[in-house]
Length: 220
Image (tube, rainbow, N blue to C red; front, side, top):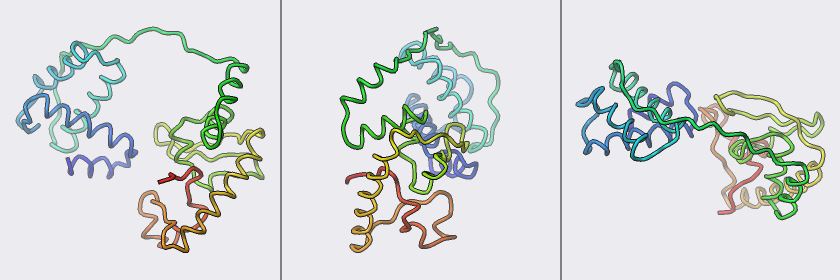
């Protein structure tokens, strides 16, 4: 598993993808009685993926993710190509998307308070995923230009989206509160965050700088 993580990180896969792929590789290994993957091949892969579709009844996208994880394991960790697979595929249901009206959105927001309301407002107003909001750093917000820089979004891509005007005032107040907390943390010897890639070695003091702090830090 350590070699699996190293291979994923060397290819700059996101942290969430690393967690998901490692989860499926463990499921694959335990499904076959904790046998080493090098001792298994196409029949065991077929059996595992078919089990996910038939017995576990996972969705098509989940089965595809499990397949991608196992293929990555064999190609980049074990160093062996996987031949043709004969897998029972999970059915992909056809569903119409549920789109809330503006009034329904306002009703939901009216029943939220504090950080949760601000997070939901940013998701709605800026078209952000929950993970993208929670990974947002202070320097990613540009009040002057009315923009938010989304780093390492879906597909490991960066993009710029609009900062909705109706949250600007609340967001400024929230950041002022977070900055006060960050100042107290620094005086107590804390207030440092995890930096992407190897920036902590390139800029040793950056982890404590205000711009790199999370917009929504954990309470504990």
